[in-house]
Length: 462
Image (tube, rainbow, N blue to C red; front, side, top):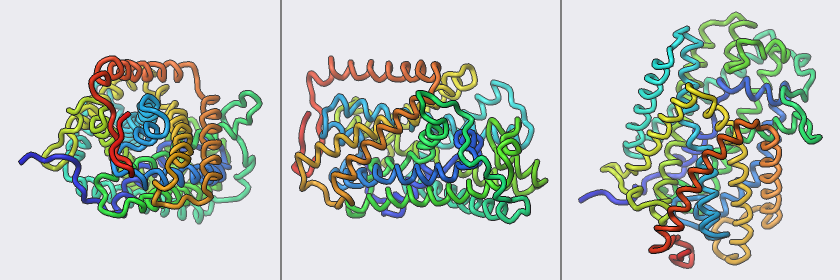
């Protein structure tokens, strides 16, 4: 008998690992970018961003306690607003998720080029990228527990290496509080009277998004649905604590000019500093293996799982053809996995043949913030219309929902200020594809069949 549906086999710890693995990444690769955004005060920016993100995470915890289907933003905004905004919000959040696999693969290849002086050609980069993507693709087709155990190994190797590196830097003999001056400095430019450091802090939403992948695994969870909020809060707090400690230790290692050297401006700031300022050779290699090769791989797996399950949910609830719900013998979605492999391969090519992928990647924070804002509005409407649906009590109630909406709108505004023309053009291309797909659903498929969502009051159509 052919398998059908997703396998209900994940306990809460597995879901926490999947979300934390998605969030916690790029510290050894994008540390140069983060430091450019907010300078020595990067650790403060991460702490403030965690405070901003938590209300949004709390609201996601409330929403995830109501619906037993995968879909997250797709379901929340369909029920709270309408199916058109449900489609838009899921397309926006998927913009961030889809860009992670090719970005991670390119990060790993960039690290290998830097560490081992390989100097791959264009065809070599494409070939290596495709091999890596195929490895993750075949892994994603295995039993979901195998997938998350592999991700967990990568994640905890990354966490362990990051914490050890932090302590080593702190007690290296070169660390000094005098290097924190100026504390609030940014390599960005002020826009519309908004200080550049604030814009930089808003862009730090990127290393926090990933907690919203939790609702994409509720169909596979074998725990009370109200406990999904624990996985969301736990993943955000775990990553925030490590980010703050790590960048506090990095900031004291040298001044901004000493850390943001020409060699470090495009990535690997800490690894370069350990080599050039401290003269270390072995530990930078081990740190790169754990934090870049394994840590970024853990993030890729987290977002790969989430994207595949969102596409599966779109097929399940009639936002895409039913073919997207077919699964293999391990009860893993087939067409969504193939679709993501193809898209990631195309993005790998674009990233090396043009600036499209780089520009598109810059819009991740903006797309995420917009999706969050729509979801917060839906949360208010759902609570007003169905106050008894939630099985998880939201701390602060309506105040938290309003605060989360304000935070999401502010982040969207500030991140929009930090984008260039090419980023907006890339975003327009992505939205254009979404609009074409949406029009096909409106003019063809939805004329003959409706969107269906399981709610606490039973199945509803839209």
